[in-house]
Image 1: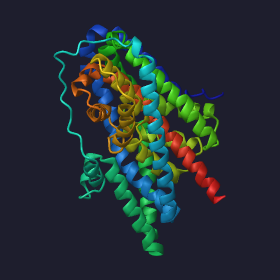
Image 2 (image 1 turned 135 degrees about the horizontal axis):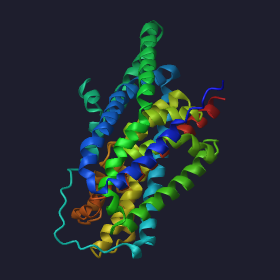
Image 3 (image 1 turned 60 degrees about the vertical axis):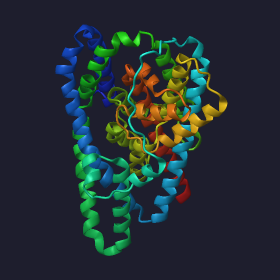
Image 4 (image 1 turned 30 degrees about the vertical axis):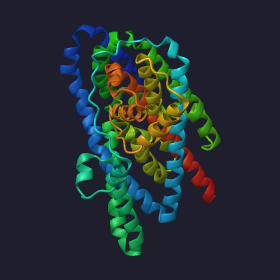
Length: 403
């Protein structure tokens, strides 16, 4: 008898996503119940993902460096990655600003009196650089500070390579630990459909009517820009430099895309993103270095959101942004993307920095804060797709170089 064909993970997540939307809309009047009884299970799932992310990042980067056995190769991969990330983020913010200006006439003009928003303190560029380097071995692991974990993994990986032949037992031990945590990740990812349902359902129950409300046009503009960036920029770069068909790329990325959309967490999507990119042909050593870095510093979707929201907030205050101000937004958003954590809501911190840089009232964030989670779902999806695109491109360029 033929064995029943199992549904793929992407199909399971998609079914969970559709069910979450239906149940969420039906529970529109019972959002409290959804938050009290459904959301906790989503939180449990996200906690499990966060638990596995730190060891996965630490050991996969270390093992990637050990397998390369060449400090210069790591430098070459790192440079290509950072250049790609900064370029696509700058393009993304330009798309956001162009989209915002095109649809500006359709944006609602909301009264800006009595608006208040407490912006989180933004750190200076020098503080951001200082904060990349850990002062304690345990604290980055406890706080899941991805940039510091990456620095730790690089230092430990380089040290193991430089010690040379006598570290065979250490290398084997780290490779075994990496395999154990990868297996643990597989087990947790099997719960993805349940996690997706429990995370998304309360969001829809709470925001359902709000989506159709006054901000529908702003949300629609942001999502159009998200699609344009993903379909144009990623399709062109993955085809030209990654040597991969865009259709194959997006099809292979579907489980990670759907998961990112539901969870709104770049770091939470990291394990699934690694799995998808490796299946698409990215080398393990490259994806284990490029993706954790991307989850922390690559914020294309967030950059688009900054552009659209800056234009919308300026319009509500009756302010016309000049070309120099728009160039300032491009530069600020590109630089602010480095060091902004890949967690839900990080875009709000960046938006405060962008508004301040061009003299727009930070209180304007209150206009979009109510539906930030809906913006966040789209921007996280774009963020992780950009990370995956970069890992495939860098992997392909490295293969060509060593051929």
